[in-house]
Picture (cartoon, rainbow, N blue to C red):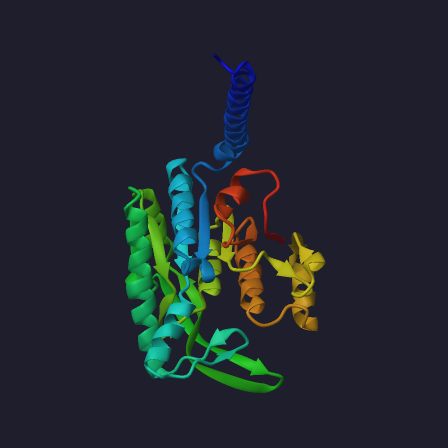
Length: 311
């Protein structure tokens, strides 16, 4: 004899499951529809992405980043990636018992360290990232800033009040060979760039990846310059979530840098934002790479997630 109460309950559960599945399908459709105008707007445009922070060390987040980039390429957006690799460099220096030292957010780089920096960035990190994209069917090509003199640098000094501080083989970009990048993009490649540059003096220079990416974005007049890092964006007080800044203009950024509100590792990020915009980048965005698919959420949704810097 059938237990009709149980049968009715099962039918009700099945109907609920169908409704939930239908809701999920509708939600997916709505997401796709929301993305459509952005796909239309950005197809054929160039985005420069700076890839760095702890997101590079997390295999799952790295996988999501690669998937995001592959999708952006497949919908017709031109992507250029500039990567960091500071943690990998620190690991190698630790193994070799070489002290790690930073000044104003920049690595102090002597003659021995610059060789290690180039080996880690242009070798291990660059080729791993390039290979990961290629496995998704994307024509990625890994290059160093030294290849075809893509990045030319001058020696960078820091200043502590009136005192000039020498931080070794650290450079600032003086020239970008944009024609090389334009040729690669036109041929259907995604350039993956290691921020190691050649100097006019023939020496090799370590360039902060944020600065390198900003210079490249400016040279290409990129539609978007996106800094992917391990923080949500800009805070006026890093210990206060309420102080998060969703949008800021350059004059205010400069004011915060002068009064010390912006300090440490955020200084090079903000400096490269300013430089990129002043050189022709239309929009700069800082986003949290620790959020899965943060690239797609920023580009294809109305709300976005990070800090937008404008001129």
